[in-house]
Length: 152
Image (cartoon, rainbow, N blue to C red; front, side, top):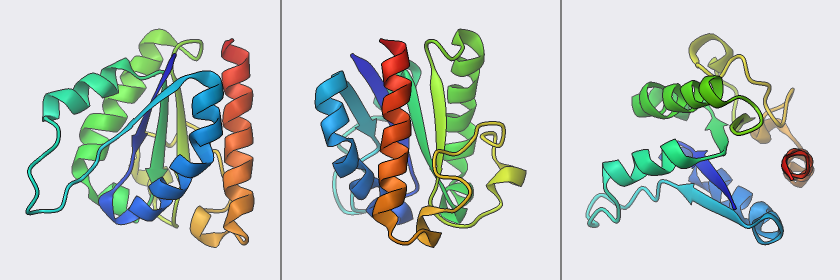
């Protein structure tokens, strides 16, 4: 089983929801366990604890970071999620941990993110810039699947 951790800013949830649909066939084929922060409505009780999120972060094999100006503004993404994922990648290498940025919208991520050294799945255009956007998701899922096949 491969554990996949998806990081995103709440304002980019629509991209997460679409990505999850595209990942569904891979989830079944590769027995993926996909985790993402559910970000409840402000009045809802939290369905998770911070420690649970950190556990998921520390156990992942694949990290997908939805990068945007929204994610750069969410301090915990860079301070917690990116730093921990990069540290795990450095410690374990590509055979055990992989990091894939997915560019959602134009931003200064190359200047301000710890992910700048990792090539985005959908470069050079962001999801917001690609028409039809389905082609971008198809390209990303194909690239991810090639990566899963090399792990088998």
